[in-house]
Length: 57
Image 1 (cartoon, rainbow, N blue to C red):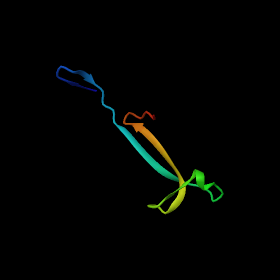
Image 2: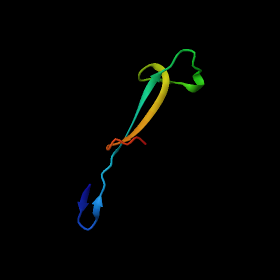
Image 3: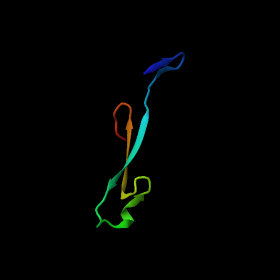
Image 4: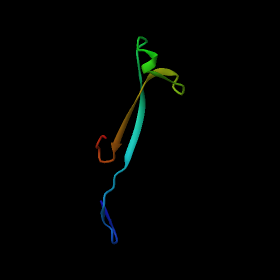
């Protein structure tokens, strides 16, 4: 927390969003998985959002 003149206490929080591709088995339907052209692999994308204070949203 910091204080600016005339503003009171200001909280600092930075949100970080990340994603990763999780490989799936060949039996998983293509309707529920996708292709990552950069990594050249099939899988499911999962996302996570975390604040700099460690709180998962």
